[in-house]
Length: 128
Image (cartoon, rainbow, N blue to C red; front, side, top):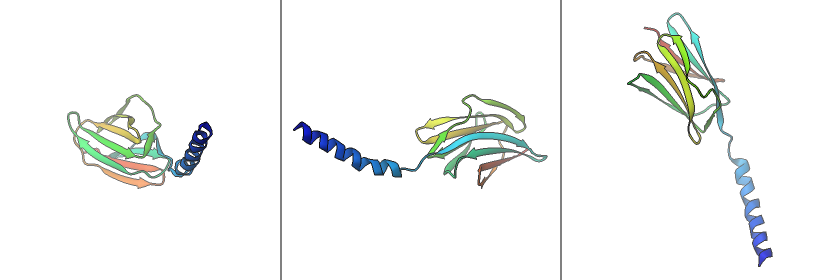
């Protein structure tokens, strides 16, 4: 009986290995950088590979929240103060398993655009 249980456990383990090996690795959010331009502030978000995301502009305080699906958060774990109007601070976290969150706290409500490139995202926030 014991030998049968050991054989069954080995069979289940061997069957599960290919499925685990095929699971895609998570993308990684590794950095967010402020780039100041004359008419806008850009936030460059570095990702190890393309990732699906959702963005939402919220108020009280105004902030742009980006949630990256199937992504591990690998950047700083503290709020980064910013003195580039309209951005007040950047912060992020592993919001939940498989979802990395980046929060761009703003001084006021602003329009924004998000462009993807080979290294991640570029979020453009006009100064006016």
